[in-house]
Length: 78
Image 1: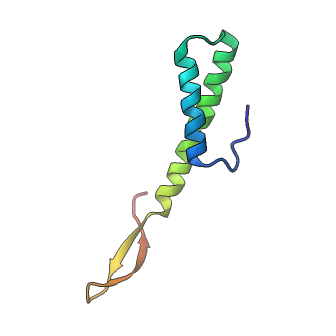
Image 2 (image 1 turned 90 degrees about the vertical axis):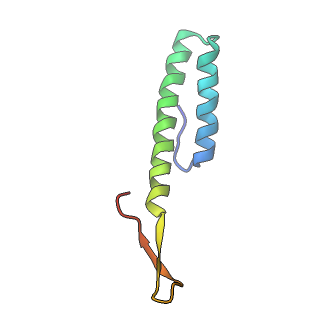
């Protein structure tokens, strides 16, 4: 079980893809399959957290009276 703190979304996705490949191969012993499944669940949760953090940073550009960008405001509903 690895520490996911500081792992980027891209790194976690690559590891998750490797876990899925290993599980789908059918060439993994039962105990290792269980450990891989647990690691995959942790990686999936980490990726979902990173995506949520990215969504929260998305901002809507506001326009001034002249139509020029005047600033940003947080996107509602995220």
